[in-house]
Amino acid sequence: MTPGAKASESRPGEHAPVTPDWTCASCGDDWPCATKRRQLLDEYQVDRASLSVYLGSCLAAASQDLCAAPVSSLQDRFIGWVPRTPRTF
Image 1: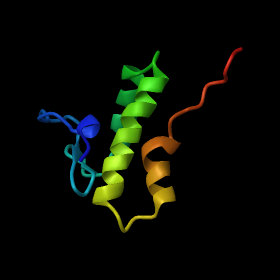
Image 2 (image 1 turned 45 degrees about the horizontal axis):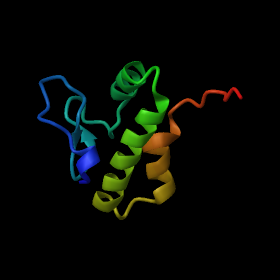
Image 3 (image 1 turned 180 degrees about the vertical axis):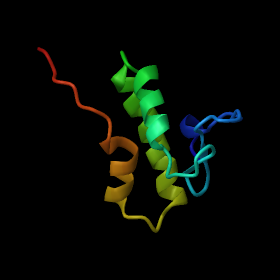
Image 4 (image 1 turned 120 degrees about the vertical axis):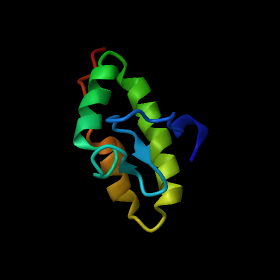
C-alpha cells in the first residue's frame, strides 16, 4: 500500500479499506462502498481535486494488491464514480 493511501486504525462502523482485498471493514462490500462514497463526497465537498488525489493513491495501491483485476474496472471502482463538475473559465 502506498503511504498516501494508508488507512489509519479503523473505528467500529467506519467504512475503511481492508487490504489486500480492498473490501470495506464495516459492510464487506468492495471499497469504497456506497456509504464511504457518500462520506467522501461530503468530506471533500469543496475540494474535489484533493479527493481525486486521495482516490488516485488508493487506486495505485489497489492496482498492486489486485493485480489480476482489469485496470478499467479498478478505475471505475476508485475514481469513476466521482461527479465531474463543469469548469468555469
